[in-house]
Amino acid sequence: MLSQRTLKALTRAVGVGLHSGERVELTLRPAPPDTGIVFRRIDLPEPVSIPVNALAVTDTRLASTLSHDDAKVRTVEHLMSACSGLGLDNLYIDITAEEVPILDGSASSFVYLLQSAGIEMQKAPRKFLRVKRRIEVREGEGDQLKWARLDPYHGFMLSFEIDFQHPAVDSTGQRVEFDMGSGRYSRDIARARTFAFSKDVEMMRANGLALGGGLDNAIVMDDTKVLNADGLRYAEEFAKHKILDAIGDLYCVGKPMLAAYSAFRSGHGLNNRLLRELLAHEDAWEMVTFESTTSAPRGFAQLARAW
Image (tube, rainbow, N blue to C red; front, side, top):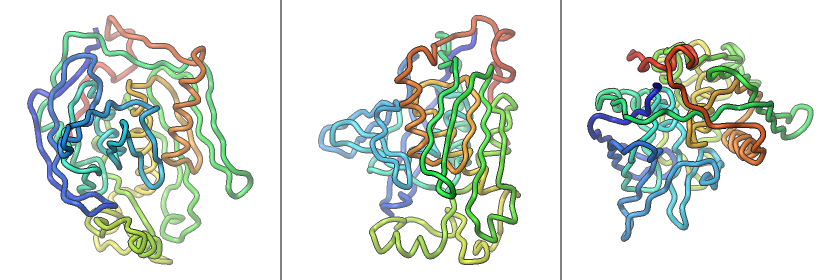
């Protein structure tokens, strides 16, 4: 049986929010089978639980935000990506502010934290959301066209193409494919950092955003080049970060997905629209479990490898 997974022990992190600049503490705790991933705003007068699901995503401007009543947790995508990459099903995430810390701007610090705590198999079957037919969402036309789609696939494959028309981006690979069954999430995807243009950062700060951003947690570019002294971590780091984001956005559906995701210039908003479109068509998906590892997709029975 492919089993659900949680942590063996709790682990903690301290950082600042990318947009708020506020200090925030995270405590990641084991959770019982069928709990899912649940954020808990423990800084509020009455702590509020915010279970992760696609319909709880209420804001996708610059990041993915989850809400329950008036309580919010912003910028969840990198942590959710790490949970997906390591195959974690059940987790309590206690948080002391409204925004998940940005740490180094990638998912690698979250991967390290989760792997350091250890991953424990649970006595319950892992439930997968299997896509049965194509679902697609599109936005804009011509030079403004963006799209994202899901197709049936026995596993979880992602393909993403970017188009930024910037010298520093154009000189790198702008299309990336990644198969989650390869077991190489930690090595090939998790270290890709978020990126921004210096002129946009200045504008965002003037509007009270990106207050915690800088060269230590993002790739920053001027009109022609990357400003980070250490350059890029991957030849295709820009496109790989979009894959990283998409993995986190899609894991907000609440279950690991069996599908082939492909996208052109998609973002948090379109990714969430794709999930909502999928869930709105009950004939397009089903929940499945695997009683034997031989019937499961390649690589899904093994724990994700460390670096």
